[in-house]
Amino acid sequence: MHGAVDTVAEIFAWLGFGVGTLVAGLSLILYLVDGTWRPVRIVIDDAPEGRVARWFGDDGVGQAVLTAEQEQAIGHDDTADAFARQGSRDRLRLTAHSPLVRAVTWFAVGFLGVGVVSLGVSIALIFVRG
Image (cartoon, rainbow, N blue to C red; front, side, top):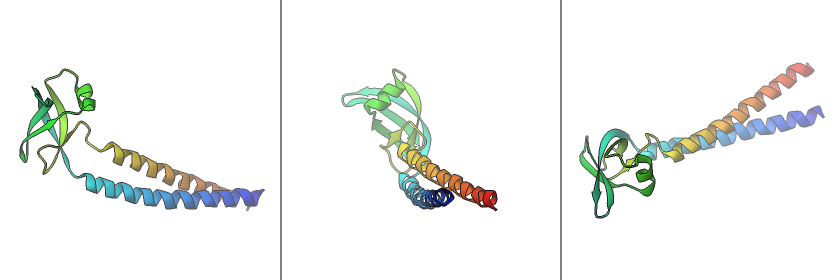
């Protein structure tokens, strides 16, 4: 019975640290690919193509057509706080960080947490039996 618990704890520790490290590396790559997003104050205007957000940024004047999700989040306001991608005049989002990067990061944290807990169980079992 004790051998099975040791084996399971060790397997979970290796999987937790191994997969957690790989997913953390993927998270870092996604973060770097996502680029730099600067906070901007947008003014919303109605246009033939839909509601359009315009802003002044470090790169000049920017403009982007709002998605249905962005329109719903902003509501009927004429201005809002948003984030524009540095180096682009037509990329806009309402959050500072990408939801994909945030989800993958939490996934990595979860796996690394499983590794830490499993390692703690393995160490505790050594002292309990000793």
